[in-house]
Length: 384
Image (cartoon, rainbow, N blue to C red; front, side, top):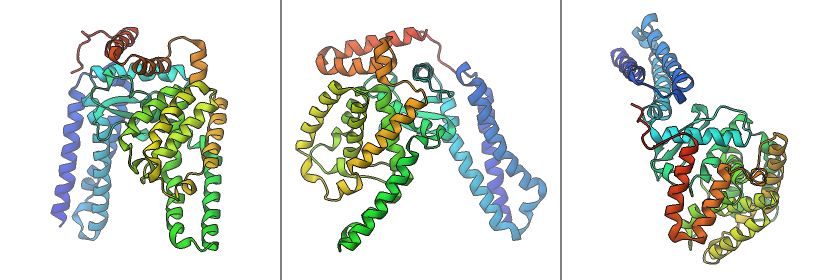
């Protein structure tokens, strides 16, 4: 067994060395050369030190330490796989789209006065996984080709929301979390007292856990998207959930995400909070039309899991927190009228709906304008 374990350690050491050698052989773009590359190499080096130390100290020679040696290997292997997936692949893939997105997200951070280093944005995702973020590794991932489209880009602000949630340690919903937990504790007692525990206690207990584990963060990210891009985020959200038209899908929650219906409700509440009444009315008309063929599938427990008073509580606390943090809202930027990215995204949605046949030409021209404003031309050399 000891020789088998030593083989595992040796293999992982070799894989680390191969990846590190590859990173060192690449001519890196200035966007990532200092911060992202140096930090990634250190993360690999830290794992390597643990593995090499196991050889150097001779601990791998003793059968008595088999369990501990396997534990250390599995931990190192998980860490290697995570860095490989979220850092190394982004480094290997850093080309024209990534250069564009780094300029874009840097401008977004500046426009909204986000006092943090912007993450790397990489097109290493796909349309099944869509947009995602890993705050620990400072990365947002998008599907390839998103650099040529505007209507999905409001969702990048949702992913920024995950980094903001991490940066503020959930501070924008700290009181809401306590209120939500208290609400579910009370509801569980109520349904038991009313003899309804058999039907509702289990789902309420599950919801209580998921609100704390993931749903509240997801709602907060939806609020970031709406706070920063206004109606554009609402339209993008409606675009995504349109796949659930005429089915129960929009009322279904998962372990990672709350129900789409509740997410749209909280987005509309934020539009109202921002004073975007006209835009809210437009979105709401489309949303109500969408619901006509879907309302029949609404579960009876849905309003117990996502009561509007809790959603409003989250909106109110979030808005006050972001205002106190001096983070610029879409309302503020649109009042300045300086052509912010969020204004462009709202213009794109307005154009796509008002003149869909001419939208392709509009979008192509607008993206070229953005690239030009970043000093990026079509003949920009690919990063090796």
